[in-house]
Image (tube, rainbow, N blue to C red; front, side):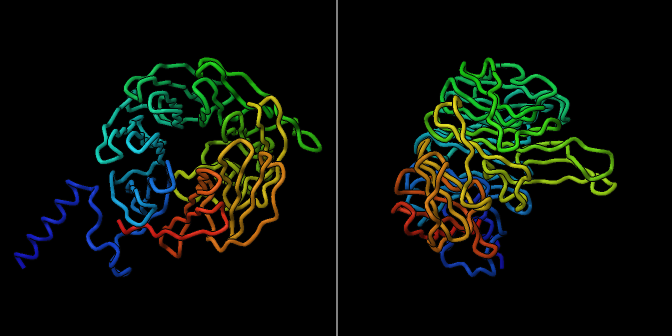
Length: 408
């Protein structure tokens, strides 16, 4: 018993000191004795073989897993306990990457050796909360922050780094009150878009590194936009001059009638409304939801209008994906993929028209997890029962192979 205890202590110590080592005998573990189940919260691949996955446990712990051989083997690189926050991860090559939490104090983790070691880079103070991170390369990044807690009336502030997160410059609030900003996405050093809430159907865009933001009007659907209420407008770059937008409108609340809602947060799209006399909080999925903590609500946002542009927002067209469920990915401004419920479809005109969905035998993806690397290769996350898995293709979506994720 003493020898067994000593061995257990030694193995546990090695696991903590060297988390990058693969789990002992992981491939042969009995499912009944596997470690706690987890969900995929983020997927980031830089090529068909090299990628990182963030797993979130029911205990709110999280772990970063890494593969260099297309998912045949995995190593654990970073882990923390008791963190109820969403995650952001972005690698720029096989060595340099960043990892941050959303909804917590601004702290960015940075690695220069592929994730074997990480450096903590705290920013601002404990009274600040990160709404969004965005990086275009290993040096230039943006951080959207709310100071003094998460009260909705306080404006979000935008910060920019030019040295990989070591120092930050305060750019002030990107939008004027009563509008609110919830997320930031940059496609170039100069060009960025916001996810915001306002009184009209307009997006916010910058062309000067985030210093100033201007409203971009969006074309109305058949019947026009509602005249009153709140509009949630989220824009996410695809590639080059391309971008996709989701516009969701909610009428103003009318007493306790159950009509109308007030937008409170994103992601997921969270609204507050009355349900026949008492307030309720509802969460919805949008066409551009990212994977930040597993699948959110299965219900799609009502009154949602998806739009696409290929010329940096000069012209927009309404799009209609093959289904409101599933996941959308893109490898340039024009070429998009959709996959859901074992079906696959593609678009060659920025989401305007789609090929007839065909069966590919893949599992249902987590919304926002489809990452299309090029015309042949793509990855997405899903689950097989209670076990998290990935699916990959190497022939343009014709065939998909399931990749098991290890117990952690």
